[in-house]
Image 1 (cartoon, rainbow, N blue to C red):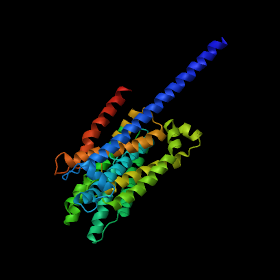
Image 2: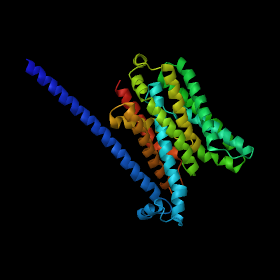
Image 3: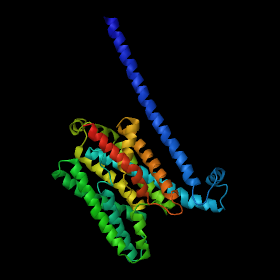
Image 4: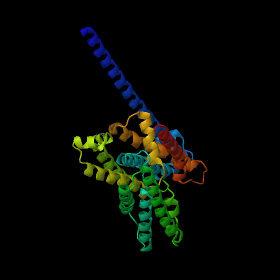
Length: 356
């Protein structure tokens, strides 16, 4: 009898180690594929454009062996800042969606759908118009602060409605309506503007990574990097919260502080994206879902970096398509992200209904 019990324990231990090995192997495979995709898309983005640059030229230029050529200026002043901003802001937007989905306990929540991006866009547009009217240049920090205020205003309306609305579907509709109102105000102001610089806001209001500079890269790196680090520090509370509010409280999580932290971090991330690139649709919903599905886990320590890198790769691919699909004409980034992101969201919602 004892030998049978011992054999059962050994078989249980072996199966546990096998499952653990399979899980770790899956995590490793997914992250390796994401990193390889990131490298490949980076090279394609640098290589592809109206001016074709060979791989050997790219290596020499990146190593600064050829600094007095036209290709050097194209790569260092135009393409590299744009690529890095697409990666940083794409990761930030995906992570913002993950935090909102954790807060609302619903995979359909995202900064674009809930109207948070549109609120940020409205305040940023009004801020830019004000500064242009008084003939002053607006700084990147000012735009981020304006976008953060707009994000908080929109999410404030959502939270006020969430106390009265019991069903998440109705809350999402309310968020979409808030987004439409904010977009209408923005379009109205931009349409009747006289200044040529203000009229150019129309392209930004549709979403674009065009015209990025190294100063934008540095500022976004600092803001998004600090926010990403703070999100990592919340990994354990997020994991506890995913198992239920009562369980999180029993584990010593301050629910009120935790909820406020989620909202603030998500607002900073979505504000950074809107301030530099305008509103970008569906990335915050589609990418977290795809990453969780690929990893087959919702553990924050694994999902947070996966979501960030996945969002970076997704936006870099979409930006490449936006630049080159109808070159020299450039598509708005939201057009491309909607084409690829919306079907994922529809599939997610249909699958969720079947699972009920």
